[in-house]
Image 1 (tube, helix red, strand yellow):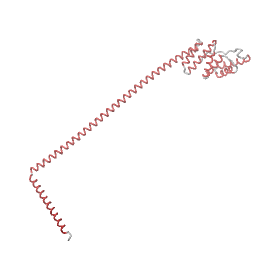
Image 2 (cartoon, helix red, strand yellow; image 1 turned 120 degrees about the horizontal axis):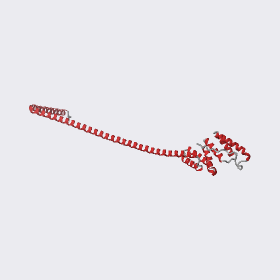
Image 3 (cartoon, one colour; image 1 turned 45 degrees about the horizontal axis):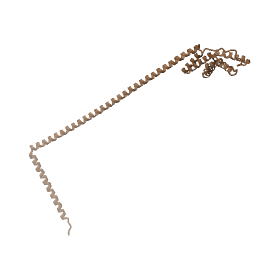
Image 4 (spheres, one colour; image 1 turned 120 degrees about the vertical axis):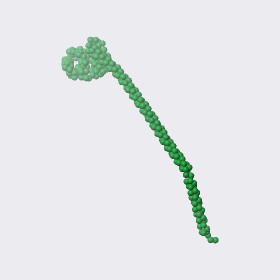
Length: 277
């Protein structure tokens, strides 16, 4: 908040600064500016103070201070800061109270901008200029506390960020381990599946081989059994085999006879058809 320190406007000024003929006009505008300021009509007050400086040539640090206050109240902080800085640079030793208030107001402006270090230095300078400036002392403690809170908050935020990073790293590690475990489990399942498929294949091949072997053994057994039966039949009926042999021999002789007869017929036909010489 702005300082309650308000300088009453003097009704007289040095004769070498203001023409005696203009004293009435100067006093009139000073009074009007003061009344407007007290009514919180800071725009009108600023216009009156600015007229005194620009048009009447009034050189008075109290007028400059009140003009700076007017611009501060109308949210023109940059313009107000310019007048406050001119006061802290130009105020004489006899006007340390004005210098203290100007420093105090610069501190408030910097605090509004959240430049707490600059504000803290401004309040220190205000107290150096006037140790009795309780508003500056109060603002100094407020900003010092605010600055400490900001530093604590930054430290806490840093710790929170580190904690979040650690937690994230832990979660990422757990996620990676889980993924690796799933991949390992998947590989094991795949290997087991392949192993099971290989076992099933081997079992199937073994089963087919056994079935084939059984079929071959069965066929061999049946063939041996058939041969044994034939052999047994031959041993039991030798006459049947002899008759078959005789019949086969007779059939072959008959076929040979028919062959020679056909050959003889063919030879006779060739003699009858030869040319006459």
